[in-house]
Amino acid sequence: MAAEIPPLVSMRGITKRFLGVKANDAIDFDVRPGEVHTLLGENGAGKSTLMNVLCGLYQPDGGNIEIEGELRRFRTPRDAITAGIGMVHQHFMLVPAQTVWENMVLGLDALPQVLPRKDIIRRIEEISERYALRVDPLAPVWQLSIGEQQRVALLKALYRQARILVLDEPTAVLIPQEIQSLFATIRQMRGEGHGIVFISHKLDEVLTVSDRISILRKGKKIGTFAAAGVTKEKLAEMMVGRQVFFNSAPPTTERGPVFLAVRDLVVRGERGNIAVQGISLELRQKEIFGLAGVAGNGQLELCEAMVGLRGSESGDVLVQGRAMGNASPRAFLDRGVAYIPEDRKGTGLVPSMNIRENVVLRKYWKKPFARGRWFIDWEVVAGHTGRLVERFGVITPGLGIPIRALSGGNLQKLMLARELSDNPKAIIAVQPTWGLDVGATEYVRERLLEQRDRGAAVFLVSEDLEELLALSDRLAVIHQGRIMGITEDPRALSEEDLGLLMAGTPLADVLRGREERGDAPLPGPLRDPGTFFAEDGAAQKKAFRAEGKEGRAPWA
Picture 1 (spheres, rainbow, N blue to C red):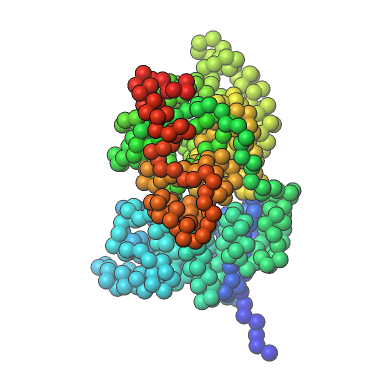
Picture 2 (tube, helix red, strand yellow):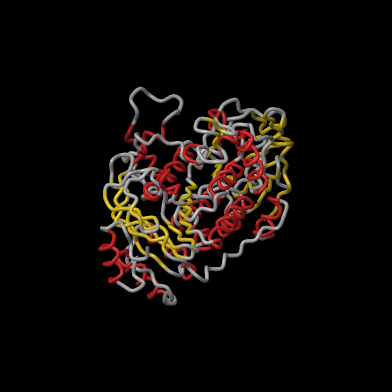
């Protein structure tokens, strides 16, 4: 009888403590040759800690690791790389100013003084061709798209002959076509005997690509299951300990008047480039207007201009028909515009400040928080903060701790509590569920729907197409700072259609492709960007422009 092939990786009884708290509590986890083993869990469940132990970033307080049956101890990440472990992080660990081939060899041992550039490039091209990860070895990383950068990160692990690959949220920034290409590469690597650890919150993708699934909750392993035998509803319930609902939100039945409009807006990016190229949009009360696009196509600059954080070159933002020019963020706030930025710890919250200070950050000068001209009534602030923390379910040991100690889900809940507590009239929400588990994601989506139903205008910017199609009443697609099209019925679009638009395919070609495939015509067809203001056609747009010179819009 042939001996059983040992797992590529076997982690037994892994325990890791931080300040006395067990982030990993005696966890067993293994990866076999030729399988995709997915690691699932809420934010803070212990997934990242476990993988950081495997990759040599953390030293375990208990347990051991075996690689192909041999007991190993990784004191540094280099030890793990030498043992054949490669990790592709959600935020790619690449040097933007260097070329693809230079990034490949960074940190490698025993490199000659003069690098054999031709040999390195030839090796990159061989791996690229073998796994369909095509990329220009001579291109600087900063010139590559997000999808191409991910290919470089994968190539880097394969170049270093990794047999065990840890993929952390690998589809978070990819369009559907890139996701399918990535899955094809994963299947090929699995077929060649690689062991792959897949970490994702997207349960449909998990069930598509996985062989086995292990679930962590609060630092402990709940169990390991064959992917073929579970549903996403069951996985979500095991992750969070309760039932989670995945139904799409019903579209709004009655849209209100336009509250915020963007007219021919041109905005520069950080490098002086034109990031937003003449965009026009209108946000109506009682609706969620979604914006789809690959990261770095002008979404950030557009949203910052819409809330006064970034000036514009030309064009304007109008709030209730009033031209705001390059008004300050406080001016937008005073007119009822709330902002939920993508960067929670950099733009949205101040990590060194405590919870009370962060909650009152945008209104400490107003009554009842202000006491006279120079003082803050901290007793009032504490009472207000406590009520919000309870109402929004923020889990924290106290109101006086710095917010950097909170998990990602609790940070997002705290920011929602601050921004939504005053019942804003418009909400600009950028990636509001990015990096959150299914439970926290469900919570955030429910709060946005509540705001819409209350009468707010919600502008939802996301790279999660499932989220956009589930929540949006109208949907636009952005590419290289231009709007590619808009639909009044997002659910009539396929993810393939959206992916093509996100990649820059002209609207006419997308519609032609639908016709050739025999797809049903869109009931609310994608419209050319020039007709965004058209309920009654060009006449309304002309009137808007004419009235806009006076700082008033025709609906004001």
